[in-house]
Image (cartoon, rainbow, N blue to C red; front, side, top):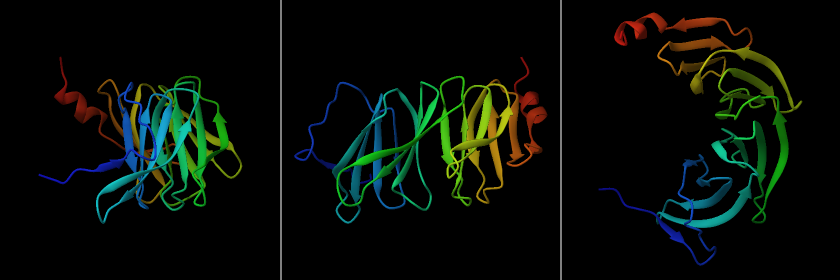
Length: 196
């Protein structure tokens, strides 16, 4: 059995009224936990498996998903129920986290937003029916693709393609980020297994 984590609760009073809905660990040992519209960020000390509180982010709306930047781990994306994506920056000097910008343009709750693993200025996001690719240096979406019932959005490791699953067993699709051209799909194969 693995060893558990200890939380240093002397540095912050923890409110247990809401359960943790999601969490993520960055490559630089930040742990973030989501409680409704609040994100708590901890430093993870791997040498003794302890967590110490660093800061909190109040997002103003229910948080559906969080994501750390792959290279600049002080940058965090929050995907929100109110159809916004917020970009935050954690300060190394003090216990602050500042809102850098808000991306607007989705018509429904944003299910997830992910930094591109290679092209650091690109973010992909999805609500129920739209996938948007954003340039975070220009604060604009430069590609907007319509799909139905999107679930489980991911970049590939090269950053050139994105994949998603259609929620109603209509398959998995991998598309090119610039053109949205489908380069791989297993829609028909999945249908064979889910014949009613």
